[in-house]
Amino acid sequence: MTRALPSNALTRRRLLQALAAAGLAGSGAGAAAQAAADAGWPARPVRLIVPFAPGGSTDVIGRMLAQQLGEMWGQTVVVENRAGAGGNVGADVVAKSPGDGYTLLFASGSITINPQLYKKMPFDTRRDLVPITNVASGPMLVVVPDDSPARSVKDLIALAKAKPGSISFGSAGVGSQVHLAGENFANAAGIDILHVPYKGEAPAYTDLIAKQTQMMVGNFAAASALLGPGRLRALAVTGRERSPLLPDVPTVAESGLPGFENTGWFGLLAPAATPPAIIAKIHRDTVKAMAGSQIKGRLYVQGMTPVGNTPAEFAKAMDDEGERWATVVRNRRLSAN
Image 1 (cartoon, rainbow, N blue to C red):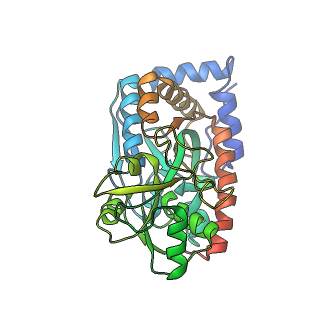
Image 2 (spheres, helix red, strand yellow):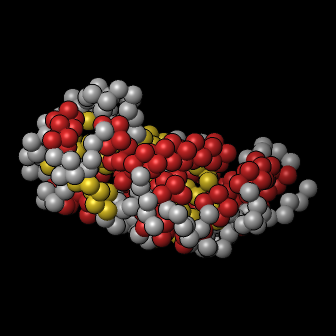
Image 3 (tube, rainbow, N blue to C red):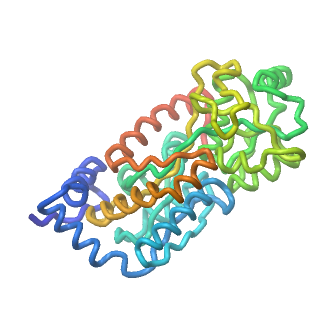
């Protein structure tokens, strides 16, 4: 049975149903579509849009995946950094690209945050983009300059409460998952801190080390690489449990905010009109790439673990996370435009 390709007007549910039939099924039409996709795609280089500046976790992990997929496909996967508006600039490029599989988005949690934060969006996440898979996830780190007077989360909260608005935190931009992680921390701690947005995570760390800002809740991979004398100190991990990479660093929950958890993640999305068979191939090959011992090891040392869920599971996780962020945005009275 031949299936028509979905248009941008189709709902995410209908597209995911088409994916299940055309690419994630094990026989029949699904197998035929898979064979067709494998035979003809990709026939030229693929663009992977990273919607943040070079050097941050999204960029590092995106390039790692691009290298693996390029080797599997026999085609170059070109990473293109399109920073701005907390990931919206890059995501908009993908949302408005042809649905042929040659332009993909390597997104972070900002893709679930921005619809809650921006009153006007340049694209509709549900209509214009289709989730492929959550590539990797992991906890984040609460970090301060190494010579900060805050030696613990309790110290940091006390300093913030003593002088409301005197402590600032950097992020990868308004609406980035680093931004909302900081707001989530402030919301749980009941403190008033000032957000300072950057065009990526890397420049935010540069100013934190220079003490232009006082704290950050950053992605584990980027933040942990900067720990040490004269640079940064980790006060807490935002996961449910301590990280085996930093066993002496307590969780935020252990440090006086019971129940607090904040997970960072990175995943693949494509334009909504992308044929289901191509989406299925990208999903299948990405899961295979992330399961390899080489990439798993490289993720582990960055505090991340591969996920590789299905498009439907990823879509639901994004919807659920969007609802949680809506609560934080409302409580913190946040708005981007």
